[in-house]
Length: 194
Ligand code: ATP
Ligand code: MG
Image (cartoon, rainbow, N blue to C red; front, side, top):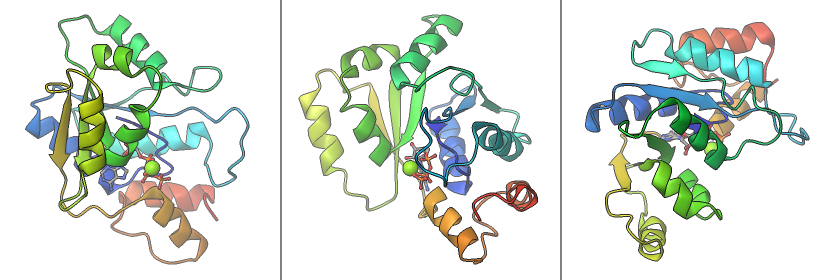
């Protein structure tokens, strides 16, 4: 599961847990993105802070892991490079699933490397009940052989987003119960997003 995790929240964690159970996965690896090469957005916490928050949020789950693969890579991270590297670590007999939100999958699969990406992994696209899947369906029709490669998974009641959490911190509104308590405290301690 790739993401900025700026910060990680219960939307990400519930999605990962649901994927584990529905697809019978052995583990979920959270992969925070590296720092953007030219930091344009001052709202993005440093890669180290985002990495640590992801570790704090996942530490108690024996099937959740965090990878530094994108954080330690120089330059901009592309999904294709990460997947190629993961494929070197995990041999062909291991199934890799890329877990994303339904919006993010549309971005990833409209890139140029779509065909190769689909040889490296399958996709689990998380949606909220009632989410309009027509764009995803029409994208699937354009790409051949997506039948057993893109799976849609419904995740309950998750309107939580990092954007909303950052806005709440700025406006001094509560963020409790949207993300793990340890991550809340880490944000306060380090004065992030103010
Ligand atoms: P931002 O608001 O800054 O874009 P975000 O909440 O979307 O942050 P990301 O780190 O961008 O979080 O997301 C990582 C992955 O998790 C993406 O694939 C995204 O679609 C998915 N995701 C984010 N929020 C949810 C949620 N509430 N439920 C399910 N998936 C989510
Ligand atoms: Mg997002």
